[in-house]
Length: 312
Ligand SMILES: [Zn+2]
Ligand SMILES: [Zn+2]
Image (cartoon, rainbow, N blue to C red):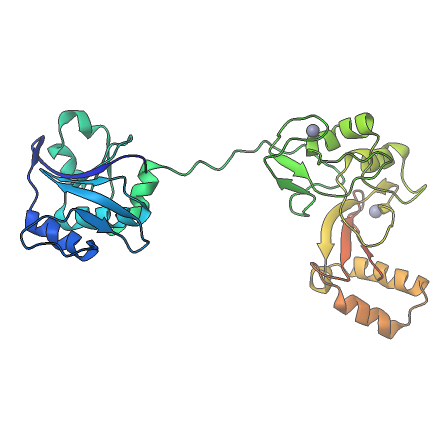
């Protein structure tokens, strides 16, 4: 805190002297020296080691109080009912709405009421230095084949410029990027969605199951749809002649409501020549956040759920 903080008692618009005995009672335990009888405390040190010079005049001033000293300031205001005069706007903290009318006219509009129970050093700091509002981030572009890339972890909030458009869009793409010349830096989801990154940088994000969906769908999935990390390479699945919608990773528990998806995984295991026992063990061990994991999709046409898994 840059400069001084004052604790003042006000009555009918004027500063009135504070009760010196009460002030001394609050401050003396924090004095790192022996305070002579009847003398005011001139120096306090807080539990966190921060300290401040203290002057008692009509009120009490704390010179450059550290964070811990603010707790002492708060205690003094709670105990005496006096106002805390800050070097910032809002300028005064009072402990009850009724106190506002005792302030000088010019301070009334610059007062904030913090009830005694809430009046701590941290509360003072919050008034002096309000935390910045969380950044408002724009809406993500639509991804028809990967509708919630934030939930799946492929897009995350970030204050970071995009390597393609150069703008800090508030979001960044965290999934895989493929191509001959993958840029050293991350892309915003808008450059993914609108094909800018594919066109400008020659990158792509997914492979598709060959020949099972129209070219337009394949291009959309490869060049304009966020990908996601997998251990093995397999193409984006298709159903009913269209690419499926990626819903996220899934473990045994998440797959339970989708017997169609489980049957599909059983079919894939059978193709690898797995017997029923190991297949069921494998399915039971699937873990949404671990290994092995499954990837859940849904057909855009018929709604059937599909799954893929890493067979590591
Ligand atoms: Zn961009
Ligand atoms: Zn279908």
